[in-house]
Length: 88
Image (cartoon, rainbow, N blue to C red; front, side, top):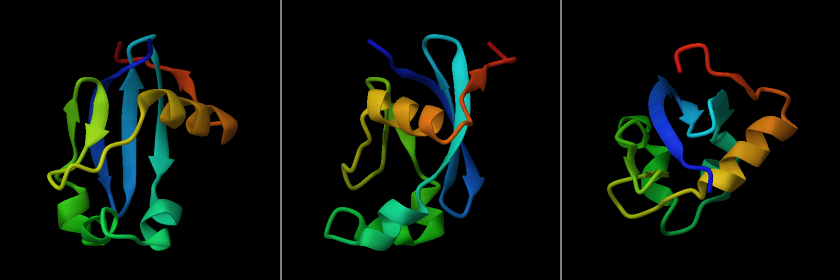
């Protein structure tokens, strides 16, 4: 099972993630944040978005919103941004 091993906030709604399989990439959450909804609403504040942390290998925010690592990896791969993590 793929997990996020490292995460770094890049500003705005972008994250750089390293996965447990040695791959990494960046993802822009702008489309998700723009959709809205009660769980996503707090993420619209960039300082709050930047408080992302890892819980059981999943990017998670203080309000309990989280993202499935497998989904995130597929999204990054589909966008052509999945690369071997040179820092791994």
